[in-house]
Amino acid sequence: MRLGRTTLQDSYARIEGGEVWLVGMHVAPYEYASGFGSFEPERKRKLLLHRHQIDEIAGRVGQQSLTLVPLALYLKDGRVKVEIALARGRRLYDKRHAIAARDTAREVAREIKDAARR
Image 1: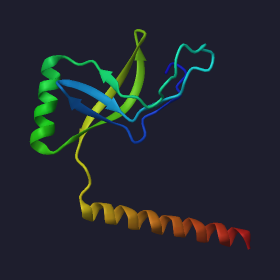
Image 2 (image 1 turned 45 degrees about the vertical axis):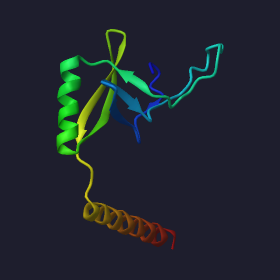
Image 3 (image 1 turned 30 degrees about the vertical axis):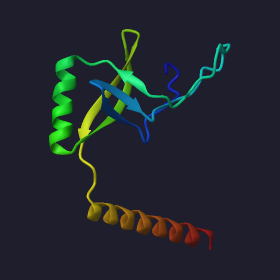
């Protein structure tokens, strides 16, 4: 993690059994470590929060249909910190709009690239 070889893409946090777990974060194995076992790059990782913080987050996630999303990783006093946020998922019509916008942007980029070749 100190080398910055982590990926937060497609990761999320989940509350299970009164604990907060980070799921789907990829951490590349340290290449200079001699192995004493296999390393799982995408295993669940426990996040340390205070009980009142976990209770508050669990209440908001349960009532408002929100999800926990990690935004950033940083080092502070030798520990890795994860900045998390509560986010609302996209509605179905928002997804359709995002897909259409992405497709048109891709077509425009393709046309520009083809015009530059000629």
